[in-house]
Length: 144
Image (cartoon, rainbow, N blue to C red; front, side, top):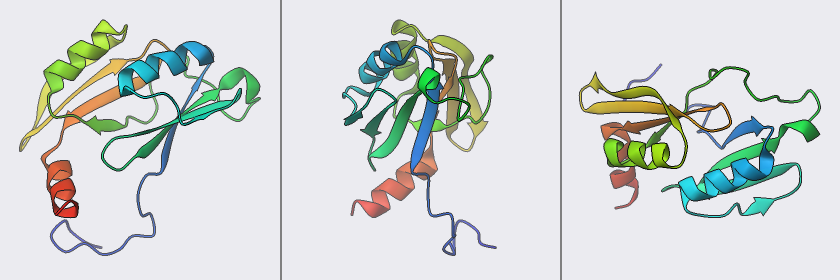
């Protein structure tokens, strides 16, 4: 067991890829290319993947009709909620709403400087945003 002041290596070393199964595959690729500001670096008929953010995290879109029973899109927004750090919640929330997302949870203060909000993308997935002081501490220590 560890705490944040004395970390012990974990066998789970970090998130590698987040995958959203979608029915409207081409529309989802175009929408997320707008959101991320980059085209997918991998683009096949069954799967597209983007590398985004400070650590080039991988975000994938799975063409659900081609995946059989492997993964299906949600019938209602739910499942895992993955928060993406942003420097300005209001600006990014407004941008996503302008791209066709709908509000799930408006900005709220989680305490100690953590501010979160979420939207539902046009394909039924929850896309969550967070201003996260811990993320900023980790990135600043790694970029020195």
